[in-house]
Structure formats: structure tokens, C-alpha cells
Length: 314
Ligand SMILES: C[S@@+](CC[C@H](N)C(=O)[O-])C[C@H]1O[C@@H](n2cnc3c(N)ncnc32)[C@H](O)[C@@H]1O
Image 1 (spheres, rainbow, N blue to C red):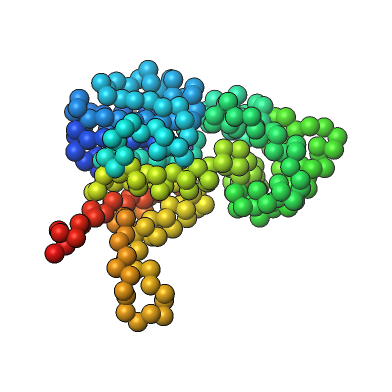
Image 2: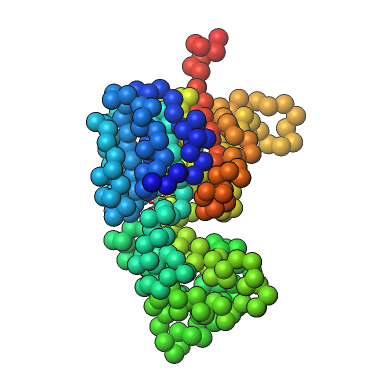
């Protein structure tokens, strides 16, 4: 059983009242939830979500709690998964972004550039669009934009051009076909540090699963779901995700929205979040030694602000 990313730090912030209502938006292999459960009483309620039905089924069999509710769905629809009376009640919410080890290590899922498989990369296998559809159907310009934006790949144009040239002769169906095209397209000196296909695969995965859109939709719904004082914990794995979380937290934590040149604040703006981890928490050397995949992880935590009624303020 693997140790989940930033295990102790996540439990420290996620856990509050042992009888509370907890949400795991990204159940995956259940690593974090398995660590939380022993701290909870039987009265606690847990909602665990994953858009990958296979992962959810496998993990469900390994977890037990009398009030555990599992939902196969996208966390962008979090509000729809709450039972009546649960809105504004969550003690803690965890969003651990990206793919699970189960998905990466399963070659047929097509996430890995090391193993030959159909170029799939769908977390939800009921959705129609696979990575192969993107590389075979998008225009060169659109491919280049996706690889540059979501992969932060400086050779995006060269890679997109090589993909389009290759598919004039033959469709791109497998992970290793794409890996070979990328290797040919990038200069030899750039292949030294990290795998040359890493950024392109990340970009296609984000595009196929609409990962950033889902995160943007979920964050405000997560705040709504929290009770005052409840905590929202988000683990991101690359700068694009982290930027969205950081910006959202900063916006929700603002105490004033007066125009910048106005000398005195008169908006009395009520923030909805208080930032708990100003810089974000990253794994230490000891964790990285046993789990190198945690290298880019960053945990950000914010607490829902207790809104004072007028009577309490007086
Ligand atoms: C990094 S793993 C979670 C690992 C888990 N915390 C653990 O310790 O085992 C991320 C999981 O979130 C799921 N996921 C990613 N985006 C999702 C979304 N928008 N809605 C629901 N599940 C999502 C993936 O299918 C994957 O299983």
C-alpha cells in the first residue's frame, strides 16, 4: 500500500471534528481517505468522488465506514452530489489533483510514455474523446497551442508540425508512436534532462480530461459546501493548477474591493476564505526519497471564514 502524498500534512489540515462531514473529491487509490478514517467516529459522514469508475470500484472494496458514500462523477459537479442539508456543512474537503498511480501504472490506460498502448488518457472511460482523437484531428495551430499552454513545452510548434506531418501518411494510435514523433521533433540537447515526451503527454492529458476547467468550476462549489471554519485542502502537481488555486484563494481572501486609487475603504467587503498556508506546503527530502513522484506536489489550505451576523458584530 503506497504512502499518499504529503500524508501527515494533509491529515493535519483536513481533519477537524471526528463526527463531521468530509469530502474527498479525488478518491483515487483511497490513500488519503484511508489515513483519515481511523480518526473519524462512526457518526462521521464521508462523500468520496472519482470520475474514474474503475478506480472507484477497486478502491471501494478496500474501504469501510458506515457512512461512506461513493460517487462516480466529476468534482466540477460537487454541488449535485450533496444530499439535502449537506451544503455548508463540510468539515474538510480534499482535492488531490492529477492522475493516480493506478492509472499511470496501468499501461492500457495510455497515460504512460514508457509503455506501448492505445493513446487514450481518459480518466472517465465513458467520455468520447481520447488523446488519439486530439492528435489526429486538431489543426496544427490548435495542437501547438495545447502543447504550449498545458505542457509549457518550448518546442510545441515543432512537435505539432511533426505530428501533422506524420498523420498525413498514417494515423497516430499508440503512445510509443507519439513518443517517437516527439523524440524526432525536439533537438537532441533537450532530451538530456527529462523525458522529451513528458510535457506533451501532460498537455494532452489535461486537454482530454478538461482538468483545469473542472478545477475552476469546483473551487467555488467547494467553498459553498464548507461549514464556517471548515478547511479546503488542494494538492496540485504543476504550475498551471497551482496558479488557479493560488489566485482563487487570494481572491476569496480579499478584504477590500475598492478601486485602487480610493484613499479610504468603504466597501466593507466580506472575504469567504482565510489562507492557512501562505506559501503552500511541499514534500521534504525524506518523502521524496521514498516517493519521487511527489516532487512537484504543493498543498494549499484555506479556511472558510465565519461570517459574523450584524448582531454578533455589535
Ligand atoms: C492523484 S489521484 C488521488 C489519489 C488519492 N488521494 C490517494 O491518496 O490515493 C487523483 C484522482 O482524481 C481523479 N480525478 C481527477 N480529476 C477529477 C475530476 N475532475 N473529478 C473527479 N475525479 C477526478 C482521478 O481519476 C484520480 O483517480
